[in-house]
Image (tube, rainbow, N blue to C red; front, top):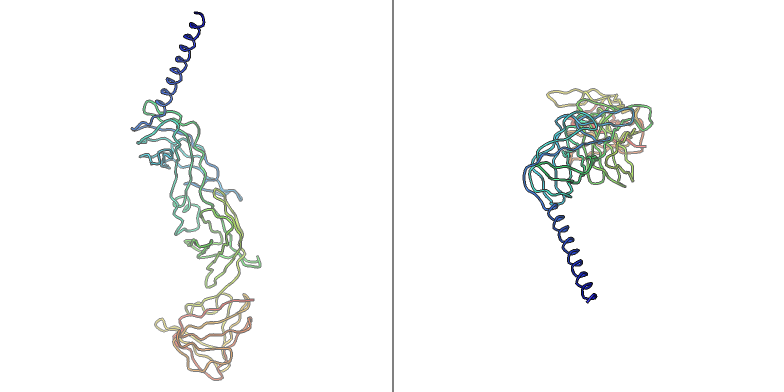
Length: 358
């Protein structure tokens, strides 16, 4: 009899334990069920460098801060959907409060991604102000701790991380003896390229671009009538990092597109006269011939794009009737002559391009 009572008691205790476990499971499931509606949300947000509406440089350190009115979108990664509405910065500063109204489906434990997103890297002007207004892209992740009384609370602060790198390029010549003010630079990374056109020529240019690893990078700069280039292999730019780089570029070419360019870019011309009439440049060549002299390195080739000449090209020069160019190629030299042996002329010159070499 006693054995029977003990067995009965064990059965009751076992059933009680199962019921308690089931009740806990039901309670847990009830708390994690998603709720659809409109909610308010407030979260603390912090940033380090991560570029936003306000950027400044202190020596070689880039600092950032939020500006009141900055807004972020919220994506529910758990439910793979955006929440309608946005969160808005309530003040200026690097550590501030975001608050706003959101609508959609949400539950305790959901992972939310806060997105400050405007990654348009085209058409940059080389300033931090442009980057802050047009190129910023930052993310933060928070976890929903509670959904109650129309309010979403999170388990931690939103620590934003930038999704791109920012570089400051200071332009100089290959010898490091002269700073260069570029009117445009082109940065090529692998198959991608980014053009920066400042409002006026400058030696310091800021560029925002996605992070990359182990890529070849080429920086090409237009400085007046001259074209410079710099290439480096196996380069890595990490997202959320700021790079201050002095670029020692090599002179690649000098281009004269108008008669006002002649004699500029470190190359002089003598032994001729020229002028533009209704936009057409004609050049009269003296009997002694033309001499091009460079103080910016050796000339490797000269291409004169023109309509025609009235002389037979001398040794070292050739005429290409297909594209109407008078071309010199030879051993790179600081001085190149075009001696026709008689007074002659070059008609309707479109451009003169000097390729530089060692």
